[in-house]
Length: 277
Image 1: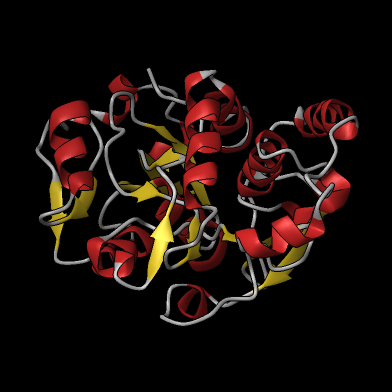
Image 2: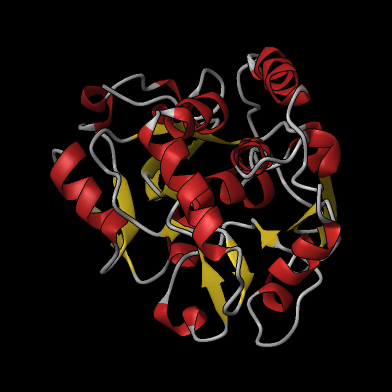
């Protein structure tokens, strides 16, 4: 998987400096306990094990490097917690969204917000909305594409009934039409065999396929104007007293542009998934 731009360390450092003077809201531990925190004076945040790039770099969320690690520390900051007052724990994806008590205050693991999951856990408002990306393999003519026009003469496919297929037809509009497959697995096999030159999938799927499933896989770039897929929200225990505060923090980060900045740095910057023109 391609790694994000090396702006990571300066931003992480700046974030650390910016948060260094913050104090955890621990003046009254008894009040915190009654407010629902797992540990007095601490904000306990969970992620997966292992946690993968570009969501968490080097499986080390405490570094603040990676999109979700950076979002977690930004949310903690808006809630009044210093970095030293953030404690990390690990959960599986299924454990996090199952009914029942939790050992975390917040959990970030690319959880799509759905009504079914809302029956078991709380969600913040979305901190990320997926986009569509073009992926390919190293021996494909798509590997050298730098823009939409470069993709038009090629065989570009996606799974039927998906927003990815809509993006192929509406944004790329290949000269010979879109190549349609019954599933992403079938599409992946077609790319591996050379039946198609490139595929369009959502960004999280693109990161996974190119890093774990495809030999020589790479992300050509994000398609412009393709935002509007799954929405990722922060998971909290059902009826958590912190849900309103976490949502307010996420809303602030969205409105002041912080989420866009972090998204560009970790998900769209040079070397990750640049936007194709």
